[in-house]
Image 1 (cartoon, rainbow, N blue to C red):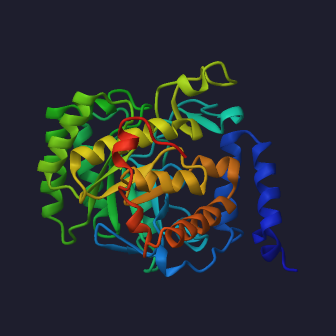
Image 2: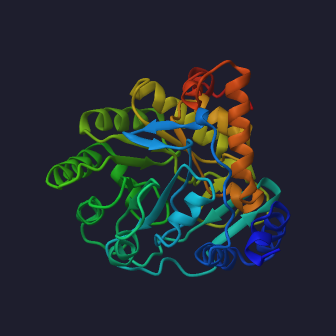
Length: 366
């Protein structure tokens, strides 16, 4: 058996996952990126037609994407698509390269299948990502998550630069204003600041040759009034979709566990309940037709189904793969197909919004 075939097999995927969990987290992440670059990643099984989904005018083979943060520098979008993701979001990318916060800056919470990071938008900048993406093969949907340099004098100008740079080649753009690791960034979620940002982004997009869909990624650490304000601004802005949500500053689900006191954003399974409630609450505010990506804490087929039922049109993974390995992706797709068939539905889109009110009220269960 060839080495590449062996490494793609299920048993070797489990072995690789276990080996990576023994490494320092950021070292493990780098090793994973290198393996994918070398063509050693898995190859996903053909998708059921029932998983085919249309989102923001884009045709996806399945509704499961790789979330931003994994491939910060646009190094492996095509290997991730070959692994079976329906779409891949690269970034967050800032105009200028920046090293991010001091290491160590990623911490596992194994007891809860959680992760805390305070990376701080470490990336190689617009130019490096553009060079990697400009010659990519068509057929895979790739979004670019854009952000601001931490020392920028004008955050809005950085997002405008992202729209100008990546509109020619991205399938969609995400304005990430919700990372907790860039001081002052989350302030852009406030009404007047958000109006200014989205107004500038939409105005800039209108001047580009391609009218690339634009999404906004928000935090889960919002109260009712803040969600009301964001919904009003978003609906009036002309952007195309929302991503709910980024990591949380809350430590309630992991209190007392190893690494729980580290600063940064909490992701993984402990984020699921909060992120899914905020998703449903934003769905209530935005209505049934506004496109939403649900992300945060998906760790099983059941949690993926619940995220769709809470109001997501499509979903994204990342942290759960640290503990579940790449095999989790196929497990989720298999579970979605089974749920669609068992309920007499025709597609994954038919699951969207089935239990919005339950999740919005905090009564949703897996």
